[in-house]
Image 1 (tube, one colour):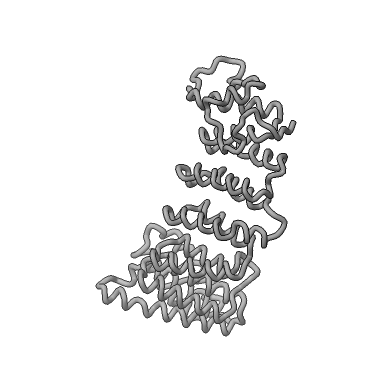
Image 2 (tube, rainbow, N blue to C red):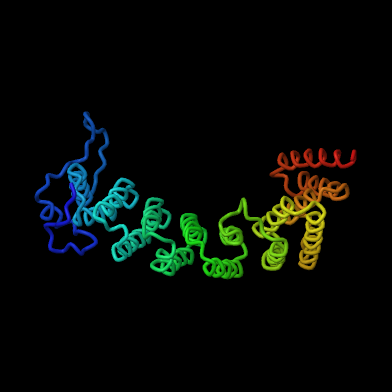
Length: 358
């Protein structure tokens, strides 16, 4: 049953006050929670406000009433429990039945609801999914979505990241939003944004991951970077990450991934020359540690990346060097992963044997 009217004179309100629920829904009989055929051994002592809201919500579900007052009641229930997926799903269905999924003002209010509830629940999956679902169903074109919500949505994601730069749900939604819009200007701005985050904190793995996604415009499997752009990014990884903090894993993994991608998409000679070039540049950074009176061989992430690069180079001298470095990691500097390095050493020796035969 769909109703577009409400007993309340305040249909514009986002949420019904709990003390008005029984009056506004006086035409419905509240339905208590079904605790099963037996008396519960340890019943949950719900607050009165929670019980009232959900008893009437069950009555609304039973009658299948899609109305403005149902939306207001759903908001009240979500304030009581923002993780209730069933209420969020009902809310989306209600917006659909009322023909409001493409109403900009309504969607803005619902986005505000998610940000209000998300403030105290920044990693609540249901809240983030609702936000995405609202935008997925909005408008008929990407351009309309960009025009109406592009700037405000990215600003909201930024506000969350400013508080917690590792919020996976926020980063996931941000990536989805950028890929959905696929706008060249937004991709360029996002590159600048990732740079600013990395400059602020070189250990922000989420920012490095986002940069990889942005460089490939979300299509990391079938859109390899052109050689010159890959070299520029490799230099960025070395200068803005590895050189500043050689112990930081993130830029080393970024660099290795760039080179591995080129190895798969360039001819063997060009790829090998590129890999050896950046392996040498990486080796040159050991002087930073020497100057700081640190032992470069104990910088596990740097040595690990060099082992990977030497393995990719694939010539006899490189493989022999990589085996020696891996053995030092196994027996001296990274004993916690000695089984991993033992496996890698075996693999490297197999490759060396093939090269020696050839």
